Image (cartoon, rainbow, N blue to C red; front, side, top):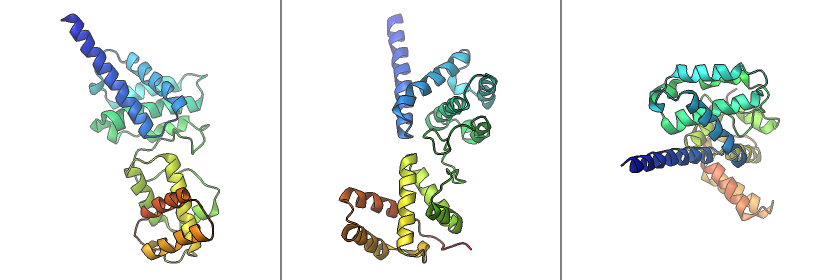
Length: 230
């Protein structure tokens, strides 16, 4: 009977890690970083051996991250990774109500060295939309002059849990599409405008069918909304 109990416990443990690693894959955490994410969770669980995971409260996370933040030689990018590992565990996998209201972003103060478009950029699906800065003037124009449309686009793509790289690629294709149409009534561009652009890519730019598909996928996500905000 004891053996069966031990086997059942191991099955639960294996299932737990399988589910967590699936979350890491879903959110495009680089393969080489995933063992570190697991290690961070193992360390966190080891620190709270006497508390069932389902019973953890915000103060457990606060105490742990505060302790990590006081480690003098801990690189800030590593601290950011620890915080992100915990966010993915609680918010995306376990989803207790307290984690949905937890202010994960306040820990960004400890992560100044991590580049803003790093794959571990903390995203919580909130359409208030933290986005990485861009040097591309077309992307800046999209974000600034058409803020409502841009916000709707990011909300749509994050609700679908698409990867960070996919979001950046689609944003680039949308700005090329708007540039092609001279930024005129971009919130009203419909199927005819999309067809015209794809024809231009195929006949004049000679882009591959795979590239055309990426462009089309980005345009499918184009929200229908208000035009420019001046």
